[in-house]
Each structure stands twice: as structure tokens, then as C-alpha cells.
Image (cartoon, rainbow, N blue to C red):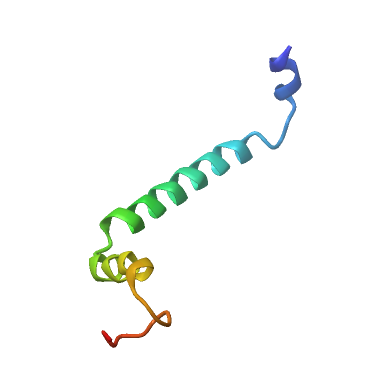
Length: 61
């Protein structure tokens, strides 16, 4: 049944390109999250709930 439906379709390459695009985008996001060295930024963000005062203030009063 599906073979007859897809036999005359001219758009069979679009699902393959979409899958390749999604996989490439997913791998790029995973690489950006885990490979990039952003430890200092993570440490600053982790301390935000514990700091008193305004967000972004660097003084320790």
C-alpha cells in the first residue's frame, strides 16, 4: 500500500535531508554544551541564588 503511494512522489529526498539536518543540529548542540570550556560562567551562575543584592554585582558586602 505504501509502495504505491510513494512510487510516484517527487519529494522522497526531503525526509532524508531533514533527518540529516536534525542529526547535525543535535550533534552541534551537544558539542556546544559539553565541549566548550565555560566552567567560570557555570560557577558564577551557580552562585547567583546564594548572593545577596543585585544580580551581576561583584562586591562581597
